[in-house]
Image 1 (cartoon, helix red, strand yellow):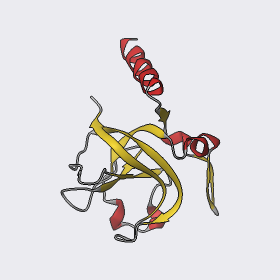
Image 2 (cartoon, one colour):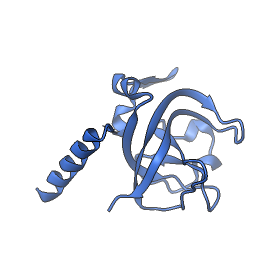
Image 3 (cartoon, helix red, strand yellow):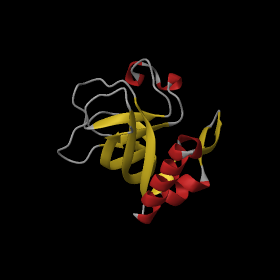
Length: 141
C-alpha cells in the first residue's frame, strides 16, 4: 500500500510540475503490417513535457549522447539487429547538449520534451518514431 501511495504521489507531483506521465502501453493505438498508429494520448502530448520509465537498451559505446529506452530489459544490442527484429515500443532518448548518460541495467525515469513522427538523425542514420529530448535521466530506486 505504501508503494502504491508513493507511485501515485510521484505521478501527481509530475502533473503539478507540468509533466504528464506516459507508459509504453500508451504509445500506439494499434500495430499493423502497415506500421503503427500513434495513440490519441501520445498525439496530445507531442511537444509537451513527459515522464517515461523504462530500461536502457544495451548501447554501442561507453558514453551516450542518446540511447534507446524500452519497456523491458533487452539482452542484446538493438543496433546489432535488423529493424524488423526491434520491438515496436521503443523510444529514442536524446541527452541535453554537453551531457552524456552512462550505460546501465537499472530502470530509468526520463523527463523531457516528447516529439513524434519519423525522423532520421543525419549524424548516425538512426530513424525514430518517438523521441524524448531529455532534461533529466535518473535511476528508479
